[in-house]
Length: 309
Image 1 (cartoon, rainbow, N blue to C red):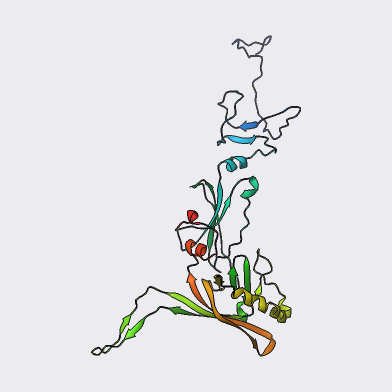
Image 2 (cartoon, rainbow, N blue to C red; image 1 turned 90 degrees about the vertical axis):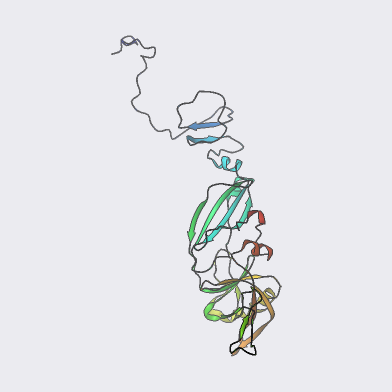
């Protein structure tokens, strides 16, 4: 019972009605002034002051600093504590991550990453992770998984990708383990001698390759209805495989190698002049899952400080 603004208890604020409900705040308007910050928090145990907190915490709802923009999220907080963004990958058989892309962070726009990964095999589940780094100290991993599948054979150098339908070509391989057998005078069976740990593949591929239409997919840059038009790419592809630079060779069955094209590729007609095929031999020169091999063979820009092996 209230009498003349007071109650029987005689409280100093007895005239103030006790609130029975609080509506959600979903709109804020600032005008007719100059403002340094707008800070909203869920915390209730704070003192009113003209100083703002030093950083975001779990109670912070929004914090607009008005640094030439109206951003009020925690992107600025990430920007202040992130020097680099890493893109990592690993397949389902490996525990260790492989760093495939590194980007320095200077502005909010640097958080956007668009990177085509050509080092993934067909039919293999791959996990990707975006990792913020603050001068060598890694943050939380944000990861996802994909299982790519394709029906083409690809030869890749940087962002230069050539392909052919596997039904139009083939790639035969040989495993090389240098060794010899020696027959001794008083032994029925020869002895086997292997003085090296060399264990690598060589192969021969044959087909009519054409470039992909764009780097966001794996569609070839020609209409299969006019198959003879592939001949227009023959010389350009021959220049590509003869440039002396190692390449990634991928088959739709999941096999993949780092290869060096060896002398001498040939361009021959198959039953008709316009039905031409290029045949080339190659030798395996590195491990496609090795960050070190990819870097020193010129297939990756990720330097040693970011390697996980």
